[in-house]
Image (cartoon, rainbow over all chains, first blue to last red; front, side):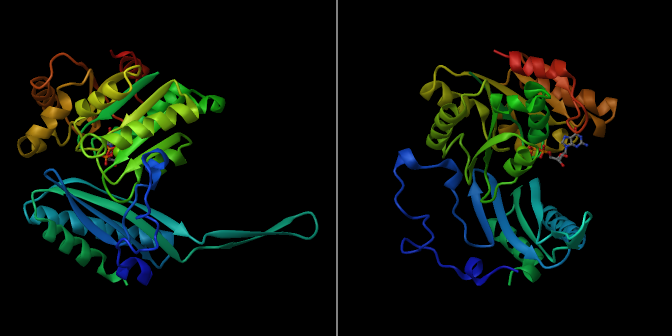
Amino acid sequence: MNTDHSKHHHHDENCSCGCHDDHPESSHQPEQHHHSHHPITVKIHDTSLVGSYKFDIDTSFEESETILDGLLKQVSQQVTALGGIIGHIKALLNAQGNSCMFSITEDESDKHRTAGSSCHVEGVAIVFGILPEQLERILNKAFNLYLD
Amino acid sequence: MKVIILGGFLGSGKTSVVIQLARHVIGADSENRTKVVILENEIGEVSIDDKILQNSGYEVANLFSGCVCCTMAGELVLGLHKIIEDFNPELIIMEATGVAYPENIRKTINHSLPDLDCSITCVTDAKRWLRLLRPMEMLLEGQLDAAEVILINKVDLVDEDSLSKVEDSIRTFNSNAQFFNISATQRIDPIVFEAILGAK
Ligand SMILES: Nc1nc2c(ncn2[C@@H]2O[C@H](COP(=O)(O)OP(=O)(O)OP(=O)(O)O)[C@@H](O)[C@H]2O)c(=O)[nH]1
Ligand SMILES: [Mg+2]
């Protein structure tokens, strides 16, 4: 689940996140160009809408895969239903906490696997032809269960 | 040093091509890994392609949260300087965002780093081309018109008839480029990579 930090974090120049520290051109690493603390953001770029989202699904990788597939299809169907055009909706699902404990007391190793019970999702939905509020609503509705 | 700008609409298959192109140049010898650096530009607030490419074992640098063809030109130049300083690679493959105009990227590079030899390859999606053409015409045209090589991708998803319609349509936007039909999820013929690498 998402922490309060990412959902309710208010972000201004007093913020301690470091994003607002002055960064002289020469030390500005491109990789640090990163600015979101909200689980869902929608930005306008030219004629496209760029929705970004991050959240956790608290279940195994296999189940999360099925859930995420359904959520993203829901997003694409709703964008299309409003007359929008899908650019690309894509996401990366990562299992957290998969581990394997190794133990050797004689010659043979003994392994104990623990399957993680939480997965992290990061993704974008880039679409055309609908309003930013509409995309925001669609993303919020689809991911609602996983945002608290 | 050569820079290949890989452009093309969202989801057309740019990253799928990058993976194979990098493998073609690097070859089997992992010692050669830093011969190629991939520069990813992603428009969202999260980056995905760079993680996929890193997991494939490549050296990847990233510019995300905006498009270098317009708002982030300064970051692009800094990013390239850093890659040259850190790795001095033979080849930089720059994957543009799916909404970028690659010619703008080339102009920025030519202006700030005139020694780099820069060519543009554009990837198009045969399956979606005709559907996207009308609503996206300006962007699609702008992505194609300066390309030296045009890859018509996802030919596995269309029949011959549709493919020839797509080809005819794409050629109306750029008749000078070298054209290749590919399926980037399958093995791409090395001839295609040689054309991309040899493009002037
Ligand atoms: N069937 C088929 N699918 C393909 C082919 N090439 C790419 N794909 C699929 O198309 C989708 C998008 O491919 P990407 O390589 O991520 O496209 P991209 O242009 O890098 O996307 P963005 O960077 O988001 O603009 C993925 O699901 C690929 O597996 C192909 O030749 N045939
Ligand atoms: Mg890509």
